[in-house]
Figure 1 (cartoon, chains in turn orange, green):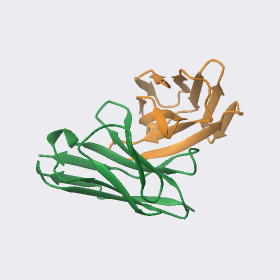
Figure 2 (cartoon, one colour; figure 1 turned 90 degrees about the horizontal axis):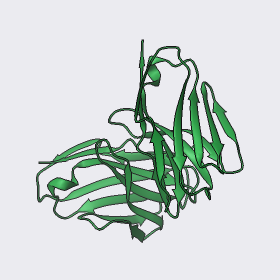
Figure 3 (cartoon, chains in turn green, blue; figure 1 turned 60 degrees about the vertical axis):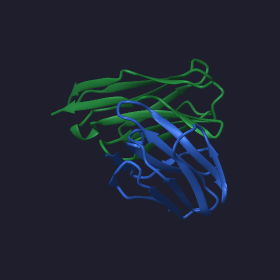
Figure 4 (tube, chains in turn cyan, brown; figure 1 turned 30 degrees about the horizontal axis):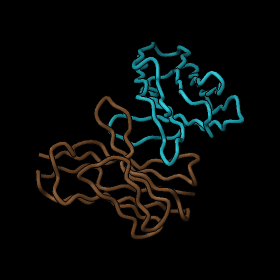
Length: 110
Length: 111
């Protein structure tokens, strides 16, 4: 059974800091891993999709890495801004489902 | 480009009343469609998924049902709501279990 864990559950940083969010999964036989952002009371916005054959993906200030063998992915946010405050979730496909972590709630203070 | 629409955004319903939440996808054909529920402070729980018209699979026993009357329409229903049905419901689609895209969600409060 695939289980996804995200650490830390919450993170508060001052504006401008670089930060890393962690995601781990128990079964390394994944097709891909996806990172999402969720603002309070809103749906999920896809940030990055890493295919199983890739090591990392970049979009603007975001960089996601994938290490299948160790069952880990990290989301790196450079030069954080208050607008980055949100909950970040990672997910992997599993059968006909997607298994989600519980998310990391990020607060970037001005 | 593909878009997903989910409505209503918020809903307050009395216990015992019926429910109908609708989700439609534009710009693609034969998508996989999903209904998730997100409880406060917890992860997303898959409720139903569909790989085609009239094909519905349920992941958990519950007071809810789903239907897919058209290729790009997915409906979540209940005949009689329970207090425990309150939550945040999310519709999603994906092209054959690859990247997933979500609607904006429906906040359901059963009173």
